[in-house]
Each structure stands twice: as structure tokens, then as C-alpha cells.
Image: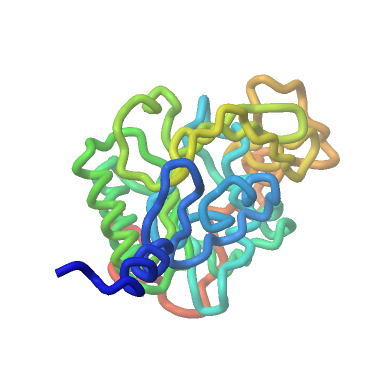
Length: 268
């Protein structure tokens, strides 16, 4: 028996929001988290970072601008919540993070003895239910490990950023969003390798804070750049140059509340 005429017309309209067409950006159930960079928001599904998914940032080298890109998100950590950085390749520079608005008392840095320990710490942070964002620097991971990380991020509605070498760009990944970063004067170029939408052929230029856009580095040093001005250190320059009195991000202020469940200092 054919369907009534009114159902034949209404059903496609009712399902339209549930169907993603490959020639347009997907409309996720929840809007994206604003990146703080309007040009980037304009080309991402949901208008920002995926809220409950794995996002990959692929880097030619640590310090290309990855943390500068994420500073606006780190600065939005809610009271009594945590931002977690797991296995960063170099020390983070606390004074510049604070100057960018990142609440250091809610920033947890985890050192890991191995890639397996780093993945475990990321899953614990995601499952704790107390983190607004988790960053994981990781080179060693097979597809099964990546899928477990993606599923844990989805199940716990927490954004997970995986920072990896760009030599892995051709490897399959369950990430909802994959971006390759390249240095440019004053910031970075963002190449969208994977998104829920049509391919984007041209990179997105993103300006970053700090002298010559060096504010997003993990070490504060860009191998392609010249000497940095001493009077204005980039946000994530190692604190070792400043002498014993400097504040080191790995020696963070005592937290006002216990850290996420399952993460214990000195037991990585």
C-alpha cells in the first residue's frame, strides 16, 4: 500500500537534519567549540572544534604553532574543571600561558614513561568527567589504539586533541577532524586533511599571538625563524633561560581540588 501523500512529502524534510551530504558541511548534534580564529571557524563543521571527538593536529616539528592555535580554547576552561596536557615534548612556559589567559591552577601536565602510558593517561582523563579538554602528544599508535581514544572521547563528551608528526598524514585515522599545520609569518597555515564536509583545497591562514606569530610553540623556538627578541618571549619558551626563580609549567601551583580520577602524580 503506498504511503499517504503527506508522509511522502514530510519524511524527507524530517530526515534532512540527520543526513550529511558530502557536498556541504555536516551539522553536528552539538555546535563546535569556537577556536578563537574566525577564518578557521568558518570552514569547520559546527563552526568550531568538535565537542566530543578526536581531532588530530599533524606537525612538521613541535613548536610550529600548535599551542598558539589552541590557546583560546585552553583559556576557556571552566571553574572546577581541568585542561590536561599529556607528554608534551618540551616544557611549557607558564608565565606566557598565564598572560594568554590560561588558568594555570586548572592546567594539569602529565609526563609519561612511554606511548602506552600516555594513551592510558588520556583515557583516564577523558573518563574522569572533570576535563574540558585533553591534549595528547603521541607518535606511536596503531589504528586500534586511535579508535579506543576516539570512542572514549565520544562516550565522555570531551574533546581530545592528538598532536602527531605530519609524516603520519597518509595513515588512516578515526579522527573526526585532521589538520596539518605549517609555519607562516605571523602564524600558521592550516591545511584541512579531513572534515565532515567537502574537501578544502586551499590552506587557511591563521594569525597567532606573540612576536612574529611564535606564540603557539611548545618550546618557544621555531627552527625556521631567527633569534627571538629577549624582551618579549613567546608564550611557550622554556623557562630554563630565566634562571631558578622562573615559573615552570611542569611545577604548577597546588590545585584547589584533587585532579581527575585515576591520574596520580608520580605514577605515570
